[in-house]
Length: 185
Image (cartoon, rainbow, N blue to C red):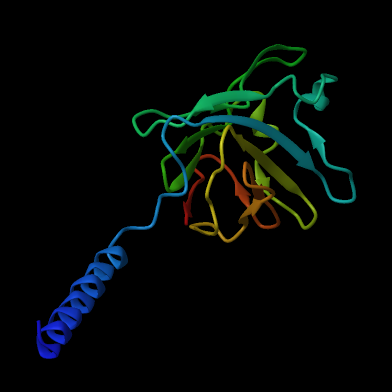
């Protein structure tokens, strides 16, 4: 084989292999969450000037007593009545939020009506120093690297590769009909 043919095949090989690299660029980035992953929810509250405490501690219960468990599903809500508690000293407590995960978002929708016997006492706009936190622990890495939110008083904190915290803070308007979406990336 002469030198020109060898150079021709060599150049053809280089162009062929380099064009394969273009396919890699069009591969979509993986979604942050995986359907089927197990999720544990724990809620904490912090009033201005006070220490953070679990929702369960308000009822003199162990911190994990009101933990909730769900499995990520794109066809149903993981926590349809989050924070609901039957049989407390205050009576049955209806759920506060419907919390629905997808592979790339978290939707919160406030459930109680304005006249709800338990929750009506907690409705209002959060002052500075008040926090309502939702700790989500995943059974595997969540792959969340950032977020955007439809509510400026809501933050997503990434504590580890398996824990994220949705944090409601100053100026959060906790009143009937409140809803927000956190888009994950």
